[in-house]
Image (cartoon, rainbow, N blue to C red; front, top):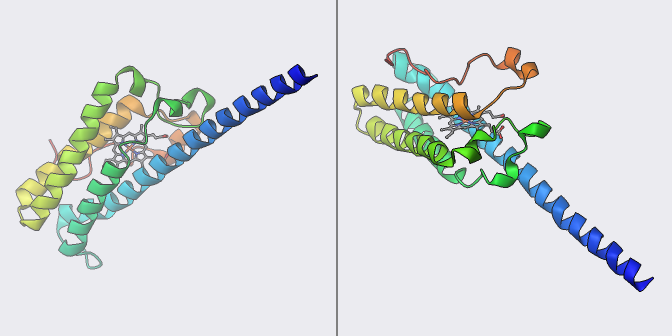
Length: 174
Ligand code: HEC
């Protein structure tokens, strides 16, 4: 009887640590998605401003702030990709298992996005519009390439999302 109780408790404890690891993974997935959405919300108002350079509700100060926020959000989300969140087979994330198969490539694209966001902030601060265009294109390229390789959409999501954040955010990109 004692043995049975012991076994039962061991299984229960195991289950609970497992469950909390699982909860943690789900939280991490939610966090990185929210962060990506935050980045996208900023790109969405920054891109047209860079493109036409005139938007009454927006100005250079806000543009600099958005670029800075994008940089910070990327930085803060860098640790949100542990192997425990490799849960796409259960439809709990759109991140593909490829991330953990070629982690170095994933990290490289991630760094590219961070560098572009950082340079974008500097270029905006310097009113260097040619450089602003270039870095916005570099940033879009990093987002788009990473999503093409590492983010898989469910069929049911395809119709809603189109290619809104696929990568080409301003007209002048090559
Ligand atoms: C190095 C890879 C990488 C980079 C760079 C990257 N993303 Fe993502 N992004 C992902 C992955 C992977 C997911 C799927 C996350 C998930 O479902 O857990 C994602 C998800 C998203 C989502 C959807 C979030 C949701 O609610 O499901 C948006 C929006 C997004 N990214 C925008 C951006 C934008 C804009 C940029 C560039 C400024 C960017 N991302 C840069 C890998 C990246």
